[in-house]
Length: 375
View: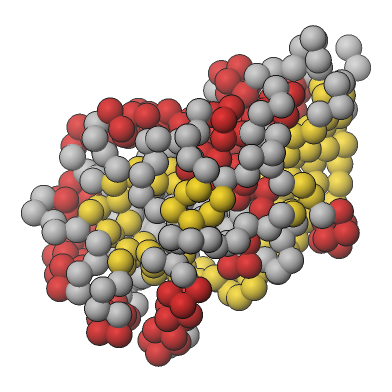
């Protein structure tokens, strides 16, 4: 029975191709935690933590995730035999919260497990697609003309679905300009909880007027009743993201009819296993689901593409090509946009991409090898 030989926790810093602004701030450089697991059989698994430098999008940060992994999660893996991803998640559930830290380890275990079985991660998870439809997420721009120009460039690149970030004061005007310039645009918006529930009527008014197909997470994550009110009579889909962290919160939202679409981010909900279960639960409720991204490098993107290949995920994913965020990316082959606004699902063992050592070393800022504590 194989066991864990080596657990390495790397911290990197990568510059983004361009600043990415949302309602909670601007990111120009991405601080990353990469989990690297090596088994006694020589197989290696990689996982990327999606926590940001600062706890703005969520309560986790790079620092808290690093501490959680070192202090509590890594010791779980020093067993006689190699833990499966499912068993790791079961044991890690003893500690509350910290889903991003847990996901980083769980993702690495899935990669390691799939490589050990000589299968692609997609097939190991139960994926059925060789290509997944994707769209692109566009941050808040300096001006409305700049936004229109940027969206036009993405359409020229071949993206068919555009999602733009919105917030109070940056919503009706930019959306109206996009609709005027691109009358047939498949347009989604994402507020990242930026609006108070008192803004229901205003959001409904401009989203309806300008033909927005989907409004994502307009209100605070705990405001399920507000989202349910928005759903009633809406001519657009209401998508929840930050509100849904597990099956219990999804069931609560379904019971309140607080959503008509679900965004699943494996790195935010505890990993691929929890993400897969959310997708299956949504499918049983006839709820469209799709895979979201969090500025991942090619490591996290490969995990996300594998998850997007599963049957429950039917809407275009927020998993654009590598050059949307990083040039060069950390992996090869890089993800490239293909026909029909799609990305190919890697077919090699595990995540199906390999680290470019020179790029990885260039951006490496800290490395720590975690060891088994002496009895």
